[in-house]
Image 1 (tube, rainbow, N blue to C red):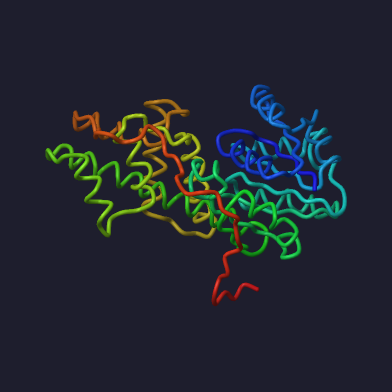
Image 2 (cartoon, rainbow, N blue to C red):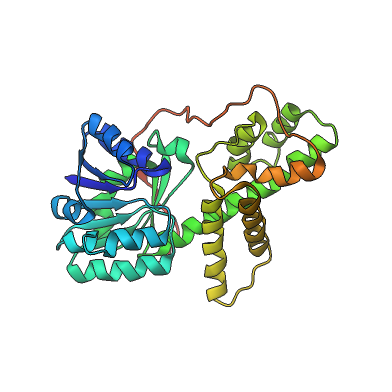
Length: 321
């Protein structure tokens, strides 16, 4: 099977690396030539355009920073849609708008190809080791065809239902992670202001009912001071904005989500759109006149679990199909 991968950024480069590392034929494309060159040096080949990639590959994967970028890659004159043909698969791994997925997906289906929205969750450190979780929204036929690829890139793979369901669930999970990050920022800053030891505070939270995946990963790089999780404020703003928009489309006015949108827009204004997202804590550090730092915490999160073959998560009691 020939696989094409467009978008070799923080997440995409790691996912594509798992494909290449596990022996698949891989063709890559990115606006950054140095990222492409790195893959060429490891045995991949490159495509001149998304159209050429789609003509030569059985599966085309896109992992891009925004719905606009995806539309350009898919629908331009030399885009993926121009090169797709019957039986081929488009696998969209970006975190994007489910309505946009369905719109472009209908064009893919009109060609006779199969669309899948396939976002990931668990952090870039797990994408690097093939241990990330993957959601897949698509027809069962398409899911079964790409499952060997998905279980190479990730460990826990969920078939979430029809096209668009994976993207809906993904923005929900990113929203929850952002709520965690905002609350952890407040908790750590408050404890620092109260004179608590930050290493003790970290372990107290970790040992308690208040712990979370976000605390056990992002709190470490917050306390180190690097604040580096390979994810930026503009991407958080995009994701929580998409979640809030999903609710608004159904006439649901949420309470917490709009506040988070305001908080991260303010963070972008203060520190720049490409600032690491955990540095949202700086708004509180500045207000409290403290630096929330501990001792001995890592500068970046590394997945210490061994790479394992992935599997489909069996969902008991489901009624959607």
